[in-house]
Image 1 (spheres, rainbow, N blue to C red):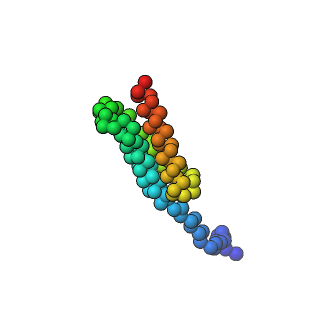
Image 2: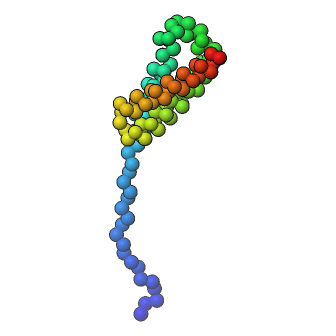
Image 3: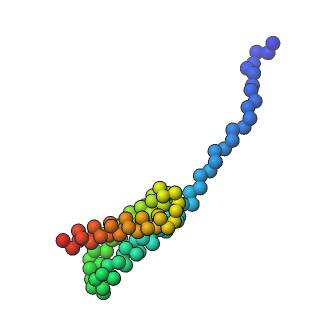
Length: 107
């Protein structure tokens, strides 16, 4: 008898299926579009005087950009990549954030 361990041959392990992460790009674009639309909304309400308001408060609104992007990506993935529904929900969420910021800055 040989004094060596017996080697077992097993079939090669299959690689796990690669997840598709293409939803992050479309979610980010949805978040950016919602941020741009929410940024343009005060121009419809207050007119050209909004530029003077943004002159001193632009860092607050710029700080909402990454929040809007992450909101777009998260909601797009949570809503199972339904484009129209995720755009509507993201737009309403980002608009609510902008509205809360506007109300806080005007008080």
